[in-house]
Figure (cartoon, rainbow over the protein chains, first blue to last red):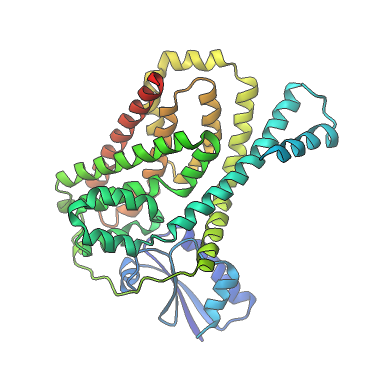
Length: 81
Length: 320
């Protein structure tokens, strides 16, 4: 079971968009994973980046900043180890 | 270049809908279809090109350059702000990252103004509606407003009004990602899609209203309104712009129509600067690290600078 986190420092449009796209992909592709939204500036800084949203899978940073990647690319990011 | 669109709109209005030539309705509709096609083509192109350029200046790189050139950090922050992509939701981590790298607070504030103000959608709208000259005027005054605002806020000892955690947290380490050309193209295409996805409806409605103003509102009426209250147009445009989010630049076709009827251009540029540089959602985000007093100071200083810039632009265009 994977642990997917969408991390941001505030509730913004791009973060919400990424959360929705990821949730949709997880559901459509039947990926065994939990998807959670984390709004915490300290979590953002822990990964050493200054742009949000962050896509983190099992503690590994897969993407940060906007624009968010195309759905196909996000799917690849979720699948890879 | 856009002749094909003229043919398409002619075909749609006169052949497909079978409207009579020369009536107000058919002319307005023709104008609306032509303008919509033209503006979206230009916008797509311009946002793509600017996003591509901006992909070479990630915030991490800008932070590094600024921290190495502290003596000229203020003007440099404005210049790099123009080139660095910015999303207001990243304002807090960006600010903390700058502080941690030892960049002066004045330069951090300058960046906070310049980066959202001179952005791809604002430049895209200006270039496609008003042309290069006005876009350059906007760029120049945008940089000036950012430098001046940052300088002034820096003089007011803002540190006492910033939450102490900002100066304590440590940024983890992250290598600057090196993008391939293909990745930069993907990035730019995504940016075009996401920006247009957010603003297209505003733009279509605005072109529609703009078309109505072009066709039906008499020039004398606009001119007499401008004459009676024209002096207040700049502060009014700024005040209206402040609470709005940067998506509101989508309303620009309305403003363009008003300018063609006699509204001075400085008011339009002041409106754009205010919507992009300042917004209510951004104030809420900044509240995470700044005391309300500092946010009020920030808004007032930037707002007044924008009003002055608006008057200067009006003055320049009157005399030239």
